[in-house]
Length: 393
Image (cartoon, rainbow, N blue to C red; front, top):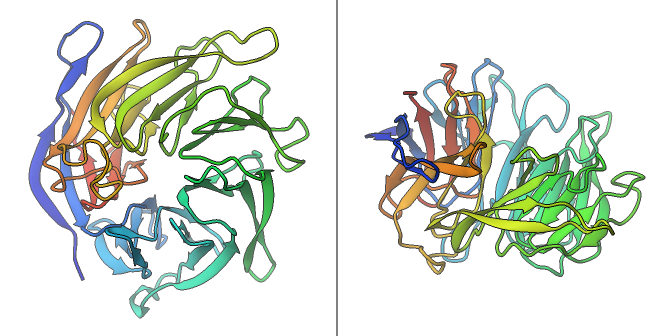
């Protein structure tokens, strides 16, 4: 068993400001590596009910407060350097009061969940595995556990890099005995694509689905009432998972933030005044083109100023070293939006030679792990699973 260890390095924020050119206040972070393998999914939650936030990442979970490594499951390897875990989520699947792990895979059609054995049983070995659903599709880029209809119960949604794959939503169905299955709703019989996000694009109050090649408009009669209307308003090459949807410039229209997951480029798409027929018009803005493989994004407040920041970085060896910038230095950073000037300031959280420090993998989790009032960052990836401890100013 590989126990958690601390990389003896404290990293201070560098900065880039695109507005005034003035230095930003430095912020301190400490890097802790939990394990190194090729897993690229991670989740955070209270596994054992002690009130402390634990971490699941691939084959292990890490028990707070010292993040001791404990076995959870086995994951199949494939390809040159992949493991069959493209995302993982913590949710009480069987309704017994504790958090289970729901996980997706890159090339497998089955979606499995792993049953939390409960306090007193963690030393007995691997968690019991249950199949949620056979989706009928492989080529899965990432998965999301997202409440698309606002009823308080999340749905399971797969993003595929294969444009021929269906766009599907799976509703979780729990029987009285705690067994769980999923019912499928087809958004579109084909028309998926790299990257995905959820939010109201056209101001009708309903959540739409954004992906690499446009967006699907939720029907007025509800998300499960039929197929969704497709709008090919834009193309976002190798878009990130997620694509963020928010009203960045406070003009009453939601904008998009996305990154090219397999090359250089971090962008935001400004939604302009729609045409008379309702067609949405977009203007692209470059945020940063100095790093590559920004495959995942997060939007959260890591500097305690009351405003969310954009958090991303480099996914290490996303395509086994064949992507642009694969051997560039690793970076994780956040960007502050300056409303008054419509620009961003960049703050480096960590940097290291390729493969020797934290990358972002396929998921970025932001939580206050130690209860000190500062939000920390947890990332998986082929350079290891890491905690980036927020030590404030």
